[in-house]
Amino acid sequence: MSDTSTAAGYAPTERTVPTRARERASYDRELVHAILDAEYVCHLGFVRDGAPVVLPTLYGRVGERLYVHGSTGSRPLRTAGRSEQGMPVCLTVTHVDGLVLARSAFHHSINYRCVVVHGLAHPVTDEAEQRAALDALVDHVLPGRADDSRPASAKELAATAVLRVDLDEVSAKVRAGGPNDEPEDLALPHWSGVVPVARTYGTPLPADDLAPGIPVPGYVTDRH
Image (tube, rainbow, N blue to C red; front, side, top):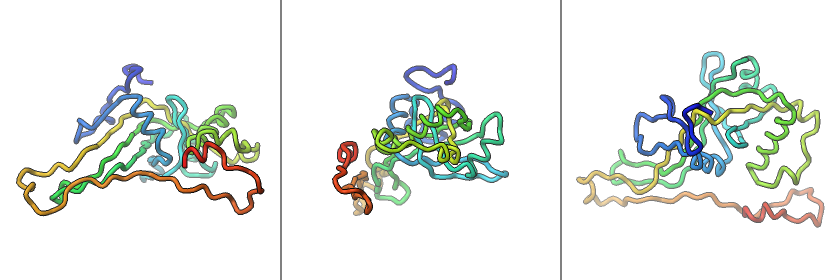
């Protein structure tokens, strides 16, 4: 954690202060955690052989640390493993909450919540931390699932690599509300407003080979 961070928030840095719409930026720790905990997929950006690479992947949070995983042969895992200092990354998570339709094409937008994390990704080599990280990844999708599934075998663990990224250089950015139409456009005959966007969960579908009598777990029906 940065020396200038506090229990309530992260310290702004040159990389985490936006050049536009600075009023939407936040460094509040609880807000950052809430945005991270409510989404499933992050985009992990890094440079490999001089070219930018951005990969979508699942993640999990344990306190002030994020974990991502993949095959031991995957690009980010191989790249991170070659660096003793860690691999520079930019990790982003975004929620879309609404489509903002303005009277002018210029002012169309979306309502969103996002988090951007800058830092160094390090391979996790300690087996206990690796297992805890994989449990966090499973529970991030559905809390309670890690205890209700078979843990990774030694062979599976050997084939899985985990990266950790500390939450140190972090910012959140949020847009909410309606369109920002120009005063001279208010009389135009075009509908203006917000179309809310929300995630829904369908009815759980059992696997074709599920043994009869195994009930749907409560943590699944609660999410539904």
